[in-house]
Image 1 (cartoon, one colour):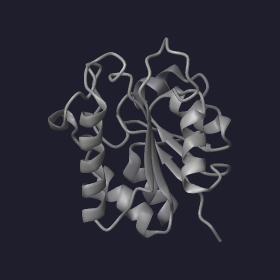
Image 2 (image 1 turned 180 degrees about the horizontal axis):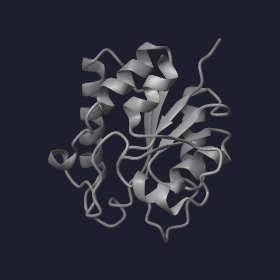
Image 3 (image 1 turned 120 degrees about the vertical axis):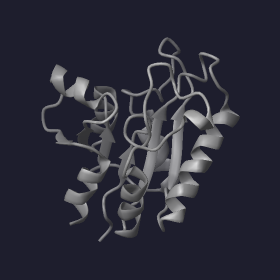
Length: 179
């Protein structure tokens, strides 16, 4: 039986987040345990994808080439642990641009479905903000909030989290899923 798709937000879930944006490879710093967690998911037979809003591109803080360096590094680190990320998709638009890919809209989730030929229905969307969870839920995913990144602030607001699971971090979620 096919295991459910796992979609991860990036900033605040996999790597450190910053209100000043992650603008360079040097600023892209994995959170403790996140790379191992992704590799464990992959080795357990889950398809892992990443869906990330990257409005810093629209704002001119960095470009697609710098973003690609960060994603290449992420893939290298996961592969070095024996795992694989099936695909990474991003929205380069700003909050005022009219697009269908910026979370909380489900466009990135639908991109992943098309790229991988799988349904997100019944899968998991792991994020640190309400917009991550809303994007996943709109495509039939179970919402998983992690307390890392902006997760603790999101949890304190409380609104919109009905039916979502909450974990300290990505590793704790993977522990519950894989064990």
